[in-house]
Length: 153
Image 1 (cartoon, rainbow, N blue to C red):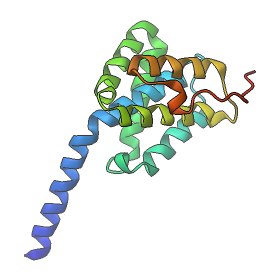
Image 2 (tube, rainbow, N blue to C red; image 1 turned 120 degrees about the vertical axis):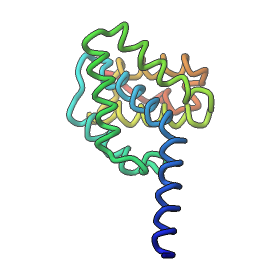
Image 3 (cartoon, rainbow, N blue to C red; image 1 turned 135 degrees about the vertical axis):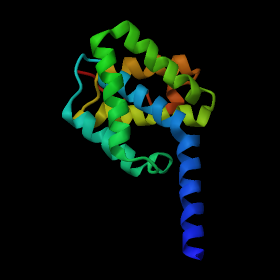
Image 4 (tube, rainbow, N blue to C red; image 1 turned 30 degrees about the horizontal axis):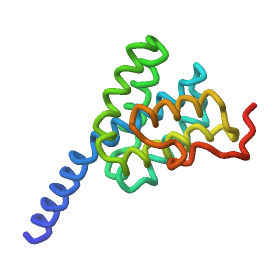
């Protein structure tokens, strides 16, 4: 009987954690989609990086990585099919994350990791990330965006 009760309590706590972090998951996947589609296509390396983030970030470990990837794919498909509407939908999902500056900074750092998945710094991706910082009211320098030694190709 005690194990059944413990199982119910554990399931309840996991469910509550998913409910609390769902807006963060949605916002992060939307932001990652904006960066990944900045150059007009989503690379395999960027998809792998998003999967790695879902599997390692504590706030997102409560989700099945496939659920996060499905959300990411929904945003990337929407952005590529109709850039204006897709961007607006992604920005709306990011609005909840923007309310907390620390979450916003973490989201930007995650976007940087997705941007660098191809092994190089892309100017187009960096512009998109800087634009995200502006929308979130964050200083790009505090989020690790500006690297004076970076050479963009």
